Length: 222
Image 1: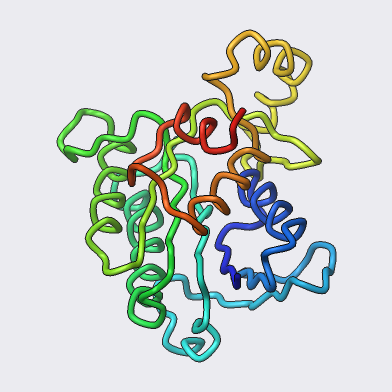
Image 2: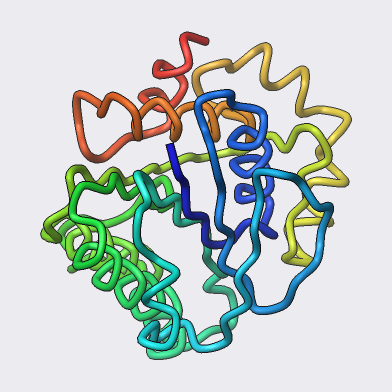
């Protein structure tokens, strides 16, 4: 299986990338990045691309993939709805529409969020925008499109958020997270579980296209 990853430098993306590189059934991974970096790996190739709203210049590099794991995202804190929409909806659909045309047999897995508003009419700005993004993805002609809605995520194996506020939160909570995970195993998932669940969905699909945290955990048999 050949895999494409967006957002591999973020906390979730780091975990997903690690699982892809460990998986014997994954032959190659292409990571779309704005700047190169990280540890080299024989399966991994990075493609530097600055304009996340236009992929015409690199379309030749985006064919022959079986799955795309879209882990790119930002916090809505302090952002206007227009700016948040440009990144959350605009970046995602620009990539997805290109990939659906070039790889119609691809499975596309999008990291959304718990509480996303599928009606697109609720009072929460971020939830409306995420809902609009999910709905648009589900209309594209992929082999399968799956929306992952994790809630609390426990970072494992060195995964670390790029958002300063989240890093502080995880630093404060890190001594408690293992205990909370044992007490509430169906309410907290891990970066490792998310990566494994994405690979499973890419290979064999899932009973539903919108997967809440309990669905994600169930896919891994945890």
